[in-house]
Amino acid sequence: MSSALVINSGSSSIKYQLFDDDDNQLLAGVIERVDNHNEAIKQLLETMKAKKSFIEPDVIGHRVVHGGERFSKPSLITKEVLEEITNLIPLAPLHNPGNIAGIEACLQAFPKTPQVAVFDTAFHQTMPASSYRYPINEAIAEQYGIRKYGFHGTSFSFVTEKTAEFLGKNKDEINLVILHLGNGASACAVKNGESFDTSMGLSPLAGLVMGTRSGDIDPAVVFYLNREAGMEISEIDNLLNSESGLRGMAGNSDMRDVMEASLNDRKASEALEVYRHRIVFYLSGFAGLLGEVDAVVLTAGIGENSKQFREFLFEDNPLGIDLDKRLNDSSNAEARTISSETSKIPLLVVPTNEELEIARQSRMASF
Ligand code: ADP
Image (tube, rainbow, N blue to C red):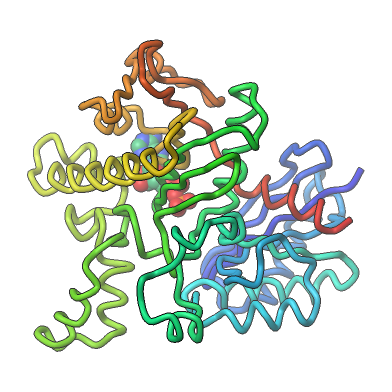
């Protein structure tokens, strides 16, 4: 028996999961307040080895947020690949450095084990130019790699596969709009099993309203705040990434708290209206671009768990989608339909599993 170890290394925490060949999760955990990734990986290894269910990993899969245009598939980590991921830091200054620190620490701790980088952006490399191009000066766009990349790719890939299985169709025959609604949130238009468009952009800041990110705003807001409020670019960056979205509007980034507060707090209920408006806007736009939609799929923390939010989201039957209250209320944790038989488009809840997808993709890439 062998296993795959999945590492999601951020700037201050490292999450890990170990899976056996049959996709069973053997171990999982998180190390918080990391300031030395080498020490943290050593600690992680000791913790894992002390457990009865530990099996030596034969591959290690690393989550890497930004793969730019260079990576459209998982890549076996070599010196060159690590250099290329390092060169992408300017595109993901908040994410790639932590990912790289985790890779370097694992290379030291497991020098003989193949290691694979799995990119959040890779799934979206199938987008056509009409989706990914920003209408700005072409030379500048090319020189600086300014285009839509999209994120949450491992989640969209996993959910597309699962949904095809659930619908009993071939993956390359299905069109979906997937709404990944977690703390970070994005929508993806899947055409014939591949990403056709997505709501995040050059960075994860674009698109839907999120826990702490604004999602789409007029870019002129940035110039205006700089000019009129005298805010530095770094302050505006922090404002839009960490102090906006639900937190900015309702004072709390957690959907559970916002839903509860909305019962008697105007700010919270208005924040929910903005949050919903933006989702329905993307959902309708993506459905229009796809023409035919086999299913609308909800996933991640909010999409999977909040029946109250799902009911609120589909209250006005957007696109003729008719949520069935009884099906919506069931607490089944499997892929399931929550729309009525008369719904114009089937509405599904399909739980995502990004770590398992990274384990699977890493195994495939290491052969
Ligand atoms: P991340 O992007 O950090 O991976 P998750 O996918 O875990 O985020 O989603 C976190 C969000 O899911 C939070 O807003 C949280 O409130 C929400 N959430 C999780 N469980 C529930 C629940 N039972 N009801 C409502 N919201 C929930």
